[in-house]
Image 1 (cartoon, one colour):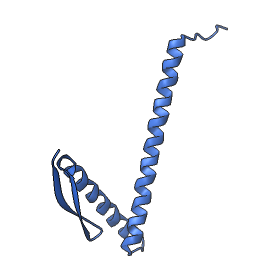
Image 2 (image 1 turned 90 degrees about the vertical axis):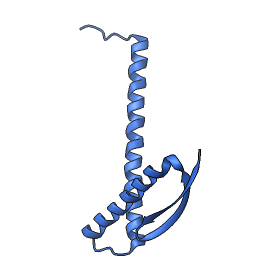
Image 3 (image 1 turned 30 degrees about the horizontal axis):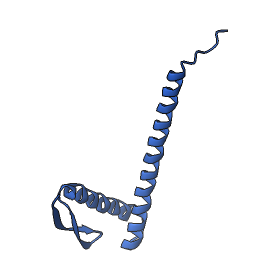
Image 4 (image 1 turned 45 degrees about the vertical axis):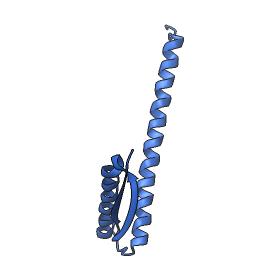
Length: 95
């Protein structure tokens, strides 16, 4: 695993990073996604302060992440219940 020094620009500021070489594309895409979201917020709201825009972007991304985690947990729980049901071979009583 080799490391790589890169610079990413987020909200007009440059950040030097040392990363694993295989993470470069993902990190550059993430930075681009942040900048894209900031641009959308600038156009949608009267907010001009980059700190506020970064905070709003972080909140949106964190909310999306929590939603996805909850969805995965629900899906895993559903699968576990179905598997237990199959293992117990529960049959519904006939009327």
